[in-house]
Length: 378
Image (cartoon, rainbow, N blue to C red; front, top):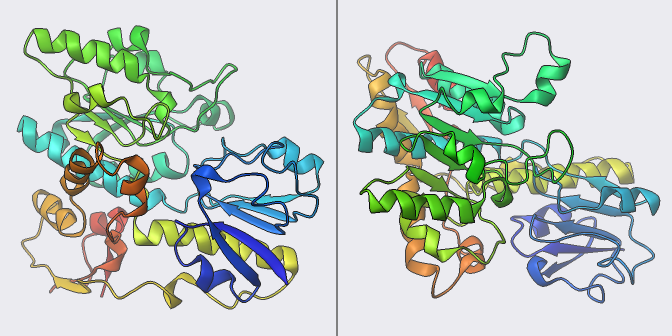
């Protein structure tokens, strides 16, 4: 029987994997080589660095999976050298992150009394998450500029705006890049004191990618300088330098501050587990017996009828019924100093994606822009 070690915060992991072996839950943040010495399968999240050091006492590992989009915490070269199969979960929580960003933008627009349709949003990194965000914003009739040099290099029709140019043209920047520490397209400290200086102080910054993409010390220095003149940059941070050790001095300068939970919808987290289950089944050459819908609980709100008068100006209220980012900001500020960053992630309250709510309308079909946002029809 396979010995399967899995992060304790991976939802439904027992449900999915119990039929494949003995599942042992572990603390992914503090995992040691001795704990995984006899593992056949290792299932992690972004808090666990899987490398030669962690696997130094293991000579039987067959499969490593991370239930995340990002893979910068995995030494894939080492796994390949050891003949260990690897799988990630690209796109698993993309919709959840998009909904986090939309909720943040709705709030910022409300605070500025400037409808989103009058904004220009710069999306930095147009992969699994960024591309969904672009489509959602375009569905809301928001002007979007896309920055992704890797896509521009291989897609002749991709509408790419270089980062330096983007800084001068937007009302908000939303980062959705992987963490790349070196090379021509490095994203490490992409937003630093030099690039911040090129960004007008009223331009909003949203980072729901990796903490090291935006330099927290540079953001703090700028925030303190702006405060002397009675102004504040709209700042939304879900990810932080040096997690779980948050730069607490920066928190009061954030409009929204959260504990790396943008992708933590029930569907987003469970979808990552499901994708790893499917990958291991393929490796073992067996037919999967479970899917996500077997385990997700019934949503609190299953169906809502909207009238023929529903329009773009009503979308914000509909979205907030499912998710309002202010809840998570309040939790973060209340619990950070006491229970801490990891406690916030482990005890994150249930949150459902837009797709969990079926919409009905007298017209028959719901407006196309709601479908593009992720809502489902009756």
